[in-house]
Image (tube, rainbow, N blue to C red):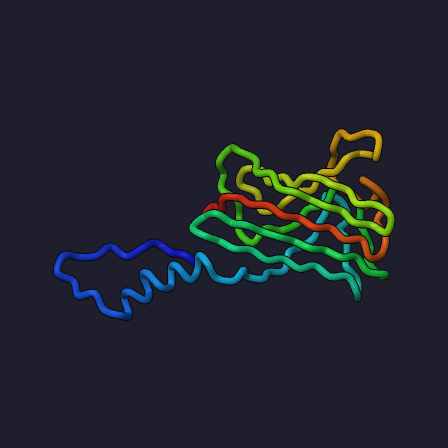
Length: 167
């Protein structure tokens, strides 16, 4: 992970260890592998539960304060869907900039593929997904257990977004 660079002092001896830390390690953190994390899936009402065979995977790449993030959730046969609008936790809190960040969301079910959006509010700790209300009503609303369609086993929710972290 990138960090604040060193302030060099006049006459200081630059050693291999310092160069490795200040240059090599910084570059490696910017072009290195993504870091896995386990997002929390919650709702504004009763929280959903993945059950014994649902999965949720998250990963991010942080360069400075810019965070690229992906979340992939697959429901299982014992998943319970809760009530209310869904949210997913971020790996880092978003900056309080007064600006909402937008990403992409997909819902894949046994019969449909829905395209939606991710919205992160200013200073957010969670991302929210928005999908068309129905196939014919393309206005968007928060994703729930029944919007844009009733969720069942093996539904996949894929979220991809980028935002500025608070620190």
